[in-house]
Length: 451
Ligand code: PLP
Image 1 (tube, rainbow, N blue to C red):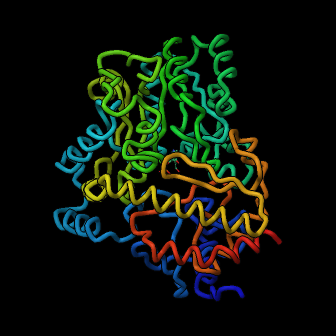
Image 2: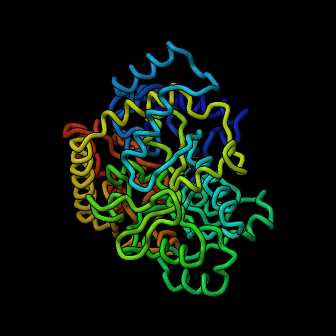
Image 3: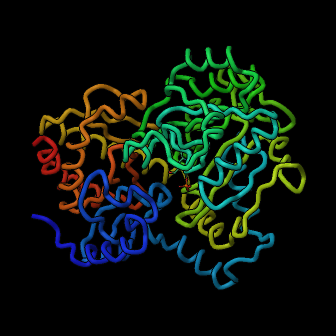
């Protein structure tokens, strides 16, 4: 049985006439799994409804932001109320102050923060600050880590770049590529020898706090603390990208998992380099997006006050945005945070672990090699036997089996990320009934993967 997708198919045909590949972000085109992407007509709670009237349990959650589920009444009311007061002012407004205060309250290394419109803008701006602060050009990133489509960070990136097996992107100048050094994820020796050789040229290491764009890779024990220590010893900075993990992996993102234990001191004091070494470490700058906008376009970057004060008009680093700090977006972000209490995180953790067991049982019963990896409440499923610690590992999986699994789940009413290189996203709207619907669809999907 295949779904009747008459309306989605004709919309896709129409879209392809005027939008490259018919989509505004590559993975949405279903290129690696084949078929026509359902065009979504509406969404509520954990469910999506497409233009042909099919209903799906959503495990994409708009790639992370919809942590309270779709059309959450509290978030929708806040946006409606904000809209009634004006859509954009291009001038300071209360909501942006409150949202940034919320970020600073929740994440210990954050002293000052600027809001932008996407995760890409956040990482791009953080890099600019790091280069200005150090007077150096070189940036170190890890293979398989995705930081948005910033020119300097597209080399061996995960996410869509992985999905389409691209080494990087055309259109990035040689000069830009030369200033980016890509190392294998988790490889302390590679980091140490690079810094021994070229430490004086390096502005920053940027890393996903826990990689989740080549599938989820649990960082090796104290790897981020090691990166902070190594960077600081050479006068370089550490930028942890929490666009995906922020307020998702835990209440304080991945830093809440591998940062100094709760109750510890706030590491970065804002006046100078944060103390490093042992467990008392902090990134110098962090980036956020997704959850903080509750489904509207928001990103943020922040960290040490002395670094953030390099931004214009205080300092020499230019950074700006017509819609930055937009009142609808900040209202959605604040309403989302209002729903993110301890009970919400406990529920997300329970749902995530139940789903992991259901998937593991179904795949094991069908004899499909797989490994499930986690970073807090985030998880993903690799179609291979051995654990994945690097991008090379992640690429070495049975993507054809994933494609069969994906399409069988879609037919069974479950919408997974259309790529084997992505995390699966649950929300607080994924209750027992919803999880049960996924459980019903899994055995047939696992059998399809086994074929
Ligand atoms: N950084 C990480 C870790 C991400 O996962 C993403 C997007 O998936 C980005 C940056 C870019 O964010 P955006 O798509 O909002 O530009």
